[in-house]
Image (cartoon, rainbow, N blue to C red; front, side, top):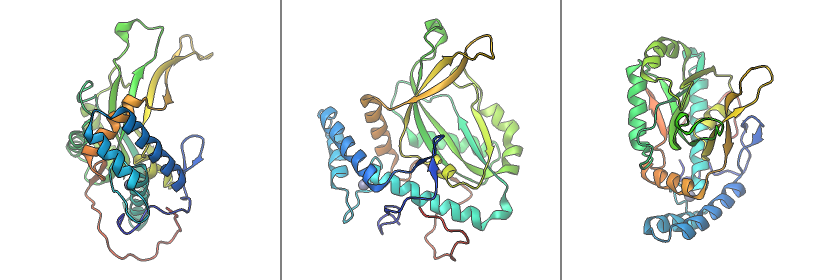
Length: 284
Ligand SMILES: [Zn+2]
């Protein structure tokens, strides 16, 4: 679908992103992001021919020839939009399987010091979902660089900075409720993550699917914030943009994962078939 130009469109999608309800990235935004990333890779990746190859691929991606590189911001946007469109149509065509919930799981990091491995993480999360009994769902792997910025705590009580791959996606509410006791055993709370399992009723907004495959990763700082209603400061998080070193780690990880390597499907698969016109209009 991407080769035929799907997902690269100019028209803004129906959904808005984040708490501030910002419009989704436009082609010119991702083009600018690709140029910036290319410069960074050339500047900081001079010792690595692999990073220079990626920079070259991103630089050549245009309407006539899409690079389809997993780290390309333009192609990443197209994958996200194609994913949202396919999933939205699936949910619309299978209303009888609902109600649906958005489920988020965070497992402890595989190797905090080592390379980020989406292939291994995909296998690990798929195994956990299956062991818990989930047989139907569509998920995306997301990445954040977590850092403990609770400066008033002693060093020993703060966790070490680490990349965290987590999963977020949609599944039938009844299946998730049935799987919950097993999920709670398989996905324990830790000092790094107090609430590793979250679920929320799907409200029909395709922004949730877009979020499950968002192309930008964040640097997530855990902080303590004063709350006048409580005796002690409360733990919360604050998002920042990635450092250059983190961005390069993420690019390497995406390159190894492949263009669709962050998509996790249970009991469904993508197929290119002609479909009836959807009832509601969704621009993606
Ligand atoms: Zn591209």
